[in-house]
Amino acid sequence: MDAGSSREPRPDSRSISTRCCVVGGGPAGMMLGYLLGRAGIDTIVLEKHADFFRDFRGDTVHPSTMQVMDELGLIGDFLKIPHDELQKLDGYFGKTPLRIADVSRTGAKYPFIAFMPQWDFLNFLRDKGHRFPNLKVMMSTEATGLIQSGDKIVGVQAEDAQGALDITADLTVACDGRHSVVRPSAGLDVEEIGAPMDVLWFRVGKGAETESVFARIESGRMMVTLDRGTYWQCAYVIVKGHYDEIKARGLDAFRADVVALAPTLRSGIADVKSWDDVKLLTVAVNRLKQWMRPGLLCIGDAAHAMSPVGGVGVNIAVQDAVAAANLLAAKLAHGPVSEDDLSAVQRRREFPMRMTQAMQVFVQNNIVRAALKPGNAPLRPPWPIRLVSAVPFLQGLTARFIAVGVRPEHVQSPEASPSTN
Image 1 (cartoon, rainbow, N blue to C red):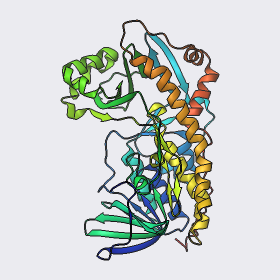
Image 2 (image 1 turned 60 degrees about the horizontal axis):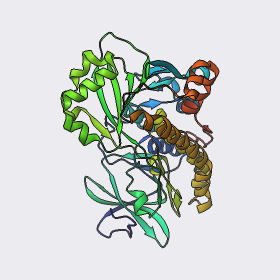
Image 3 (image 1 turned 90 degrees about the horizontal axis):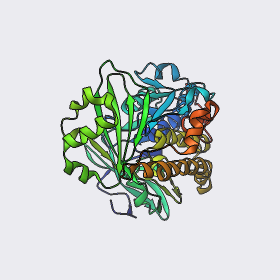
Image 4 (image 1 turned 90 degrees about the vertical axis):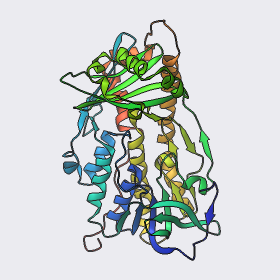
């Protein structure tokens, strides 16, 4: 789809209508769909894939998201999904052990970070949403363009197994991620902030060994390891654009670098059998200057791509969805929403997004960039990190910023009566 392309309904396509069309079945899209369906709003969620099974996606569910699940009455069933729990974020900066954050000190009702496959999270929301007759999740249905009437977006052009499909809607919400096809179609300007690194994601088999170390930083190298019970989920941080150089050195050299940084991975590193087992995440940090046009709103990564620093992307997306439902659901029940209604979502969520991105950029520029510089000099942790590690109270503050976030949202959108649903 070409940037800026918006088109009229196609005479040869099938057509359906709804109050709200959500493009993208990720965390923002599925949560918004659930909340609007719960409020009795006719809502269609489009997901281009046949299922949610995509590996190496954000698997962290923070206390702020679990609080939302609690407010929706879903937390009991949600926590029955197999998951791992993390409270303390420990690491090594050079040879110095550090405690970066302690989620148990946040005061959150659910004082831990839950690790579960994102497809389980999304399937859970879809399954729970089945009880809402107003909500329809259309899998294998890909948005290809926007339908425009004058200066207003009035729906989405899509393709499914049966061919062309036009969906007219009072409101279209783009939740289709950092590679959104909707936002360039709408001609929305993106402000690129940039990042000094990319990330290589891979799994390493795990035996009986246990280790609480979360992050390891040495001169020229950096890695995060997550204990997932039967395997280690690994994020090996590299200088942006250097993936081809790393591949050129060979897989054996890469595996040797990984084991040198994290000896506990030695027993399972053979699980990385080829470069097909290593997935490149190209890190981007950007944001839209304006999240909306008449009839269109962007939230989640479609509005602001987050760095992987802190693992907050899923939770920021969920918070956007909760805020959007809080501000728009009751008004959508009576018809289209105004430009000012849509702008209110950006006004509500832009400050916490900018604050979080500022934290991520600070870490990228002052820790990650310095760590990735080649050299043999031993690394010493910066004094702010040493101070946090030495003072438990400060570990609670850093954990609250990461795990609860700036301006956490609470469910205020209405719930339709059973007779309505």
